[in-house]
Image (cartoon, rainbow, N blue to C red; front, side, top):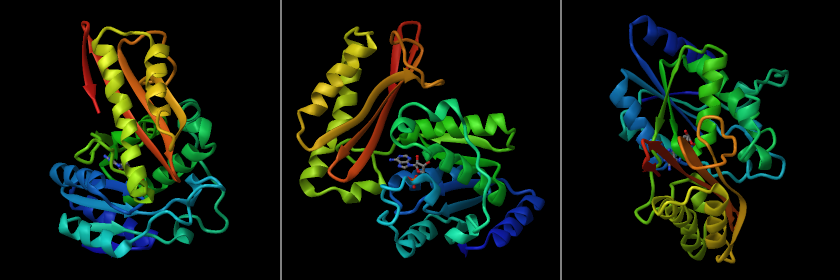
Length: 290
Ligand code: AMP
């Protein structure tokens, strides 16, 4: 595995590989890698000839009161894990390389960035879309891999690619969970032993939503009410949102039908955790993906 830190070096390596007819698979990350990230890497390895992983904690997607400085970083451990997976290139640029001091261009995916995370993290998706577009221009992948764990991010990136006609195919991979159901996240390291137990309530609330739908409940407000009630029983949990939306537009729904996303963000101690459940209805039959 080669580690590159300069944009120009990465662009030369990518153009060279493309000129040789190789298919490039790209996995953008912020590091502190876990099995969720590695599942994307394995999928990229399977699908393509050359795998590039980036590790870049993107300052543009953190608000002033957020955890940019404390975000877990361990490049040595991460690069060992990636070497073990047979990754070809690790791209780990310093901040100045991506945001030189005269940097002034941003991209925003307007409507999809507004609800859910957008309500609580203004500017977040502008930061995400901008860095992903820059990384695509640097790495020039044929395919890029993202986790369903960040469902709204997946929609924003798909729309970015569609709107700007980017020549890259987006592959969405399923959520990887701990054996007890907690969605893997770099921020799980912030949880104390008790909080780690409390954090299970996100997954439990999605299970409750599934039960309700299976029992015939179709009213979004009722499903959200029951989920909130379950979460509020945990004194350590503080809800940012619990929402049931159209999975494509992320707009509120009147009734559970078609493809539905139930998404939630909940603070447990100093960790802000996300989880979601994707529901597809066809001919009155539901499939649940979480
Ligand atoms: P991050 O390092 O948090 O920016 O995540 C990098 C990529 O890994 C994103 O596409 C995430 O959606 C994905 N990812 C993070 N956690 C998981 C997980 N538990 N399962 C699947 N993908 C994940």
